[in-house]
Amino acid sequence: MICRFLEQEVAPYYESWEEAGEVPRALWRRLGEAGLLGIDMPEPLGGAGADFAITQLVIEEISRRGFGGLASAYNIHANIVMPYLLHIATPAQQQRWLPAMASGEVISAIAMTEPGAGSDLAAMKTRARRTGHGWRLDGGKIFITNGQVADLVIVCAKTDPEAGAKGVSLFLVDATLPGFSRGKPIKKIGQHASDTAELFFDGIELTEDALLGEEGAGFAYLMQELPRERLGVGAQALGAMEGALALTLDYVKERRAFGRRVGDFQNTRFTLAEVQADIEMGRAYLEKCMALYRQGTMGPTEAAILKLRLTEMQCATADTCLQLFGGYGYTREYPISRFYLDARVQTIYAGTSEIMKEVVARSLLGKA
Image (cartoon, rainbow, N blue to C red; front, side):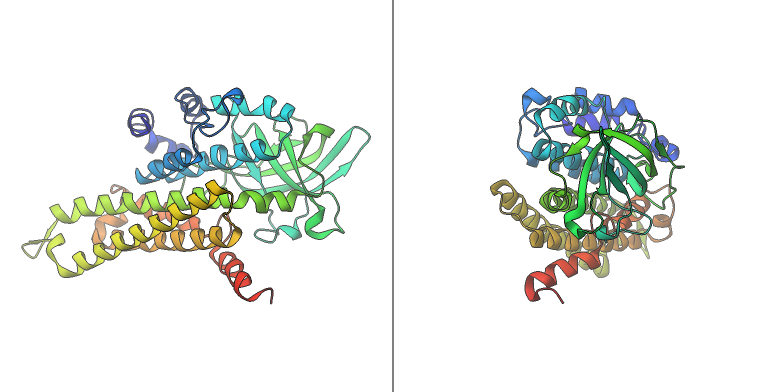
């Protein structure tokens, strides 16, 4: 059903979405109608009550077909923001937002990164100050996936600037509130269909029930939910690797050079064998992490290893496969070029490869 949906509702239009720089709102509603949003959310909240692995399967299949921008947009909404609400929100907050998110009526984003604070969340400047009626939110965020179209944004803000990580809180921000604004769409080298925005919060008045979870527990919630986020990124990477390999196999079987198929040269054969080996090893570790997540025992180290290795392998695979296309691989006419461009950001968002290495090193050696 997932494949049929992508063939009918996405493939014929995806190039135009890449040109437009965003996925149309109508697609979100069709995803909701097909039951592909909130797959592992409870049925009373608009979901299907299925296993979380099916959500990862959707992400993987979107990526396999070369729809990297859509995969990122979907991952943020269905695999990151919705679980935040399921695990942290009050019943009233869940009833207000999750059914509409599952139907595709409400599109969501999460806003952590700031111009001067990327991976260093402790350096964020966005502030939420208590008022007599709730909170006043001031600041800004950048590189926010779904930012141009989001109706709901989870915003990370400092509520106690002197408390370090314990001074961060999360807020559910309705994008229609006065003081909420968006900058021009950020132009990227890849994942064009995934809109990316800078968001501004100018004295937004939030009611008390906009606080997500407990005050000062924001950083702990981020750490709690990161494994799920990085599972989604890993599924994107694996699907993209499989898609790039499939394109390349088709090409080298047909393309001829020096009187032989390109696929008959030893270099081609050995190169593709290594790609397949990487895919198999990557899938084994992804499945291990999914089993740990299901048991509630997947920790930050496993998540960091998964994110580090699979995204780096994705970039290497896309580069390797493009090389086998020769000059054609460098043209937009051949889809392998989009696999190459869409891959690059995977080693940056959701924690850079360098941060992932630091997480793993700390688990081995402790803090420096």
